[in-house]
Length: 211
Image (cartoon, rainbow, N blue to C red):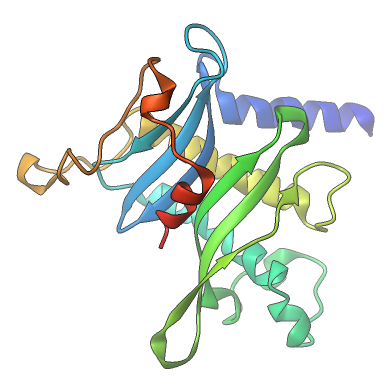
């Protein structure tokens, strides 16, 4: 069993970082088909520096699909299935339930070291009269000691999201025509190592970007 867990951890690490990437994605928020993300340099020049990228191009459908996998987790964490007296042995059983579609996860934040990571989900929930309310999950550990029953499934979905954001960072997006791009004074992307202080964003500022 320990060997299988070690192999799984290696696979997840490979998905997150890639074989030749010098950074990891630590957070992302999708809003109006653009994304704002945080990443950290993990090797080479600028190691441990953190940056914020403000995407000026449209995200691809694959990123939206990856984020959609998180909706059922937010619904479960919000106890909506429990209050509806719904019992299930797999999240797949409730992934397409109407209650799941009340939730839309638009962002996540990663905290902790690679061996001890936790995630916070940022979402909205549909309420009466067509309105939506903002939700923020508690910190969810992604390791064996997690209080969350479906942490392995959540970890896998978060890995997919991080990979999609990394690909976006590397140019996998729908490019806009020059006249369609947002004002560069309001949105800009910082890719290379430099003075991290110029690109720092507090967790509160990052979270507010989803509102």
